[in-house]
Amino acid sequence: MNIPIALLGYGNVGRAFVELVQRKGEALRRDVNLAVTLIGIATKSHGAVIDPDGLDLEAVRRAKALGEPMPTLDFIARCPAAAFLEATSTNPFDGQPALDFVRAALRKGAHVVSANKGPVVFAHRELQALAREKGVGFFFESTVMDGAPVLGVGREGLPGADIRRIRGIFNSTTNLILTLMETAGMAFDAALAETQRLGLAETDPTLDVDGWDASIKTAILANVLMGADLRPADVDRQGIAGIAREDVLEAAKNGERIRLVCEASRAENGRVQARVAPERVPMHGALGSVMGTTSIVEFETDMLPCLTIVEHDPGPMTTAYGMLVDLVNLARGRAQESAE
Ligand SMILES: NC(=O)c1ccc[n+]([C@@H]2O[C@H](COP(=O)([O-])OP(=O)(O)OC[C@H]3O[C@@H](n4cnc5c(N)ncnc54)[C@H](OP(=O)(O)O)[C@@H]3O)[C@@H](O)[C@H]2O)c1
Image (cartoon, rainbow, N blue to C red; front, side):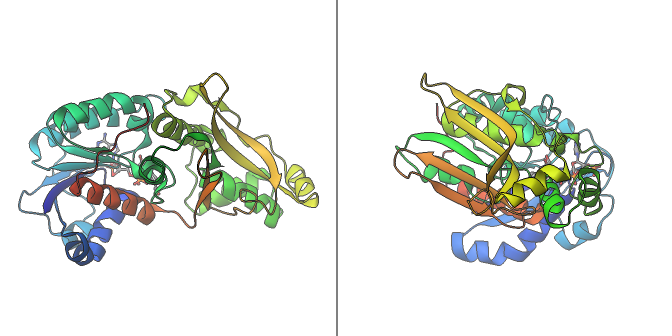
């Protein structure tokens, strides 16, 4: 099977995806009989390119600019891709304009794979219904814990199980800040500056530090795996800006670590509630032993009491891998339905 695909966004993730297709093209053909042909790329300010015969991957990897500028909705209308890969910037306030890009692609009958959390957290049900109506897939494994198959395990690996609680550490930047405050004795500001120097935190780091990114991921898990209908603002949220080095060191003296813990749980009345807040957790427990940019999720279910997935060293390449896995599942015709 050959899938002509197009990338919306050609930043860290888009570029990693092209490199991944080059690296894994042969293995995909051999193992799952799948050929991926990149026929288009759209960016915001570096132009767009479409070639239905397939782009020269080596040339687009070297290219700084791709072609003439083209509004992204026009690109989606004109590009004959069977699947669009959404890797434009996340807008945590309303998911736009990526939400309209996903709508447009699905409406024209193309599959969509999104690494972008915005469309998923604001309109997952609408987009899933639209995909169903059009007989295509809407996939978004990379939106939570990058390439780790967290949504896949929750949806496909636990049939019939009742997910009662999901708990974890989903934001790498804040976890690295807390780690540096403990292991290097840095003050909060110095640790934040270090994560920015490493290219992890944004120039405006409030989305990470204030817990918004973690809230978006928690809401996605609650909505997709526990049947909730939460927006980021519905998550009870507290960030790490008020944490001092002394708090971190005092916790360590008591065998504990402060972690930005994300949790979605089902209350007695059946409602799902979600929170993100710094918590003191045992240093040698699952969450307490997560250091640096590593992420973790624990599923508490009526069948498997606690199932844990840990992802070490996430980055654009692991995110790209999650998108590739979505493409493979798409080729296998997997339905990506959520808990209702
Ligand atoms: N980095 C990761 O490891 C990671 C992990 C999980 C999820 N994600 C998600 O993946 C997405 C991409 O991340 P990234 O790190 O690759 O971001 P990035 O490096 O900032 O790249 C964003 C790309 O999107 C393009 N873009 C922005 N607005 C656009 C628009 N209106 N139309 C067309 N293209 C547009 C930009 O175009 P220009 O080049 O012209 O600016 C750029 O090429 C984000 O939603 C992010 O949250 C990333």
